[in-house]
Amino acid sequence: MIYHSAKEILQQCQETNLPLHQLSLNAECQLTGKSPEDIRIYLGDVLATMFEAIELGLDAAHPEYRGKIIGDDGIKLAKREMPLCGETISKAAQYALSTMKVNAGMGRIVASPTAGSCGVMPAVLKTLSEQLTLSETDLINGLLVANIIGSIVARNATISGAEGGCQAEVGTASAMAAGAAVYLAGGTAEQVFHAGAMAFKNLLGLVCDPIAGLVESPCAKRNAMGATNALLCAEMSLAGIESIVPFDEVVEAMRRVGQVMPVALRETALGGLAATPTAVQITTDLFKTSSTL
Amino acid sequence: MKSYTLFDIIGPIMIGPSSSHTAGACRIGYTLHHIIKAPLKSVDFTLYGSFAKTYVGHGTDLALLGGILGFKPDDKRIVNAKEIARDSGLSFSFKPSSDETRHPNTVKINVITEDGKPWEAIGESIGGGKMQLIQINGIDIQFTGAYNTLITHHQDTPGMLAQITAVISKHAINIANMKLYRESRGLKAIGIIEMDEDIPKSAIEQLSVIDGVSYVTLIERIYE
Image (cartoon, rainbow over all chains, first blue to last red; front, side, top):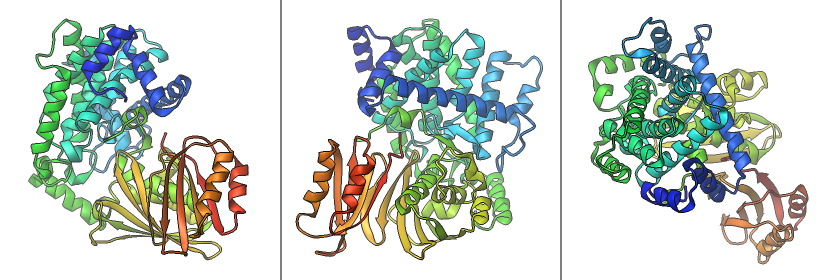
């Protein structure tokens, strides 16, 4: 991304009168030397891959896509009649869990921004596509807007769990998805960044503590939370609720929190949930079945 | 400064579960596959750091092997890489090592081709599915696969570089980055030339007939 901050992008929007997705597309063409068509074709593949993973994960006839620890949580959730949290939130959670299961089972997914957070964007996009009348072009525009948010975070902070904890992975994915959701629902560029900022703030400080070092638990359920958090923050932003702290400052706060986060809580599987007696037992059991793990 | 494009933020499209342990590992193997460009008899992987500790849980073994078989990180055949290798008569092994390395996700790959030529490469998976090869056949390099890249093996003699770049310039190709590595003065050297444009076959043919050039290969951009 050629832009440094949300502030710069909002200024560009005003000066050029271009919609946010167009700004993202132009910037990527300039950066990569690719044509707008090339990028749209790639994003079409991205969407197809995302939706295919959701379907595979929710299809009980594909038991090969399971993790070493996690299983059919998405299917369980889909079987609930009249979910307490409503159809929309339940669907978003199902889609996120389903994608993470397929990822754990070595299926094909899209790292967005990472494999550990690959459930959030597809969950929100698919939920929205069922809620609103959206074309493939619309959804691709949503991905382009999410790219702006993810790029700013990657540039100014980090999207790696090893550097910044889970806030950098699921936090970034949730902010990207919140921004895309606002945009697809017709919100303004300012509202996109307010939603992104709020989604991030809710997940600030989240540690990365994967059991046995695998991208499974607590990752899958945190993806479900990241997706539903994105929808909540999009809803708030569309209602005119603003983030008290602007997006760029939230990103900087996330970077600083990541910096002071102990190494044990940054993807090393040495702290947090990974260090609980249950997690240690799971790790030991996995060692038994596979002496090289 | 860290540089990210859309293909890093919304991507890569990949076989799970981990961008560094699966996609990056696959790209290391895939890159070497394209450098060697010959059928293989055997391949042995030595795994270091986090690769050594978690390679089974993350499918790093399947990804490395799939890569060396020529599968890209989003190729579903990665899951069956071991069966496919066995069926094609390729023998393989994985050995975790406790030796310290520069980067936590490092692998050393020893290959013997069907015509008996040994190759050795060391690769690092540096995050988000990106990788770099840091050594080929004992010579230190830094090769990322982010550009169309020409690799030359040539004699370290005066004027060699001018002959090579003359061919490239004749085809109106812009050189983005260029690095030279050599064993020692006057002996074998490796050139890594990264370019923005696609390179026609004719240019590679012209390069390979330069006196003192023993080997030329083109690796097309691996990252989008």
